[in-house]
Amino acid sequence: MQPLRALVFDLEALADVDSAGHRAAFNAAFAQLGLDIEWSAARYRQLQALPDERRRVAAELRKRGVRTECDVLAELLVDEICSAKEMILDETILDADIAPTAGLVDLIAEAFGAGIGIAIVSRGRHTWVEPLVRQLVGEGLVGTVVTAADVADTPGANLYSAALADLGVSAQDSLVFAGSPANQRMAMAAGLPTVLIDGDNTANAPLRVADCRRAHDRWQESPRPSAA
Image (spheres, one colour):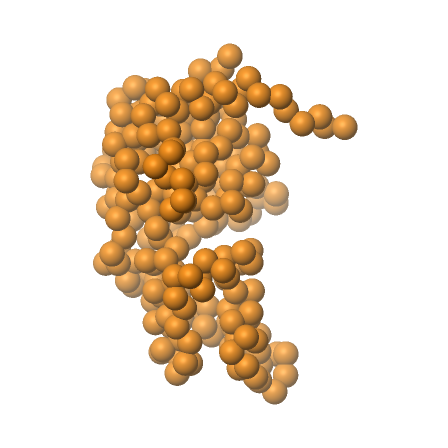
């Protein structure tokens, strides 16, 4: 039985960055570009079934009947919206009303005290992800922060695998807190035991180190699918 040596958190599990950060930035971008679109929290959750932001924007434009003269112009409009959103997010994310998920900062502090490594992963830009992590968690507790840019030059690279490499641990030594089913699938594809944290099940999540060790041990004891 491998001991638990690391906890890896999606930024989306650590805090509601999607709704309070990304959704708000998109709504500001729509307004800036004169588009009569405003995503509610419920609508944004629906769109998150799509794997990337460009496809979400394109789906919304089609639903709203926003037409352009050709596919190229439609692509340019999507580009313009996403670019405006990224600029707004960079400028506003640290001032947004983003609070950490209840119990997770205490868990991180307890794990750090127990000698367990802590990593945060995110598809966001490193320029705002790292200061946001410090803002949410404090200084000195997180051993590594990995963003999409850190693995962009490595084909097939996985945020979780990169975080484990930085911490010097293996997948069997670790437990992931994923903030969405998509991130959960990515972590599991890297061979990591994973707990899903969302608005429906946070209260049942392992929020003490002892709970994390039990969840990690149960995963190790469970049968694995055959590679055949």
